[in-house]
Image 1 (cartoon, helix red, strand yellow):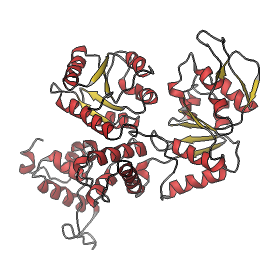
Image 2 (tube, helix red, strand yellow; image 1 turned 180 degrees about the vertical axis):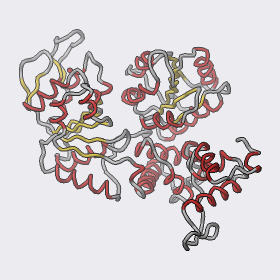
Image 3 (tube, one colour; image 1 turned 30 degrees about the horizontal axis):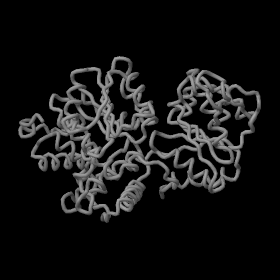
Image 4 (cartoon, rainbow, N blue to C red; image 1 turned 90 degrees about the horizontal axis):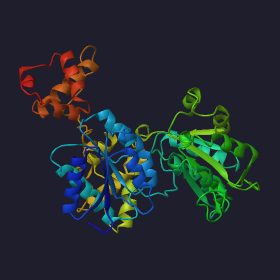
Length: 461
């Protein structure tokens, strides 16, 4: 394990957390322990801490662990967040990954799977220490109609250099990439691109971070400092996760309206000379209706809204992006990796990618680093992706006869279930996996088609 690889274990069961720490220690892995969300945030926010992995319990005493994933990523963008839970829940797993977690593990008395997952993260970081969850891709790739429309919208707004833009979409869809694309279209090549993550803004310093401060303006202000608006002069300022900004909504509105701002502790006004782009994965209109976001600020930000589509709606773009990320990592590591096989492509196309493009990027980076054969195999993909694998059924195995009353959708579904059960040797969990549905959905469909045969009843799996 490379020097400096450090793990944060967050679990309110102190004995369990310590047991994980002991296992990590036996493998010479440095670790910290936290027993609540507040303790975890305190540790990840320290500049002298740099974690390679964060093992995060689902249920913690002060709030749900899942809720602090965005803050962990904001403070520790290089860290892989792995959720731990005593209760396996597919919706929770999807939500965790959608919020930025890389994986989801069920807590057991046997700690080997958890430690092995940490060792795998360490191996990835050892191979590419500065690239994991790397930032800075400035190209909005894709050929689907939705992405083409986004590109057209960005091209149009690039002609108006001062217009505020609001980028919306789920976490990981590429809002920052779209912002960088707009920046490259409308600003000089060497102009600054400044990102402020509003969800990670400390309440006591948020105004200083955005607008700067003068020396002596508050306790600890030992010298004057320019804020993000000033640093972005001549370029672009991206206010990411704007839906999580609370205290400064009124001041931000005034700045956007007047095009002027002042440092904390100063009355001198500074002209705003940057395009402001706001981005959010939340429904701002819904927040306005709840009284959690100012209507006038929403209207000011929403001058030119652009929605970035989720990856699951982008069809073959999934493969285009997978090949792009694969090749990019391979070049960086000086490796030769073959094009993705049809089997791997099928698995990727069947997966819904709750973490969107960011998740696909991480999956491909991990797969390239884990591969020793010069090609990506199914074993190099995370288990959560493999459980969505759908077995292809060729024409010779499932011929169709569309004469009236012969092959209907109902009869076709029944035949597919029968074939999956045979292939899975009537293990229902495996049959459901082959069909790409849950076991509960399979049982309902079997009952509807009268397929609860003695053979299938013999297996309770």
